Amino acid sequence: MIVLHYKQANKLQKLLAKHHCPELLEEPLIQVNVAKEKRLTVYLRLQKRGGAVVNLDKWLHEKSAVLEWSLKLKKHVSCHAKTRHMEDDLFACSDQTIKISSMDIKRW
Image (tube, rainbow, N blue to C red; front, side):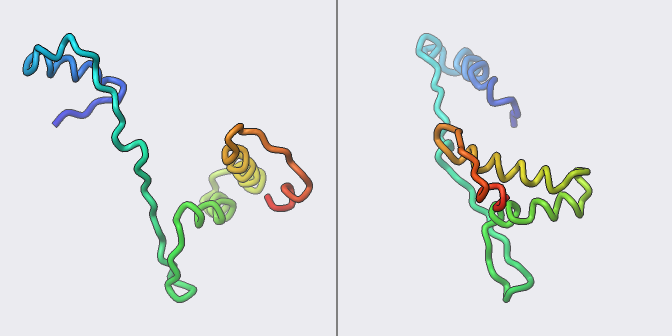
């Protein structure tokens, strides 16, 4: 088994071709990420609420402030959680630009 940083894949391809397929050394390297469209969706079954099933990403998003406070991850928990919500809104836009209104501030 070989474990290497993904950025080193070209070197591995050249090494394998050198010893096993020398005719491929002259060809351009294959650079394809076959899993780039693959998404992993994880769900969480809650003990309360009748065992409801919720998306883990959404649950973590909603509980971020409480988790940070309970695990003492940050001194200014509410500020950090608000920043995360602002970042989520910003990166949700294709141009990564948002206009902040008073309604946005209340929602965060």
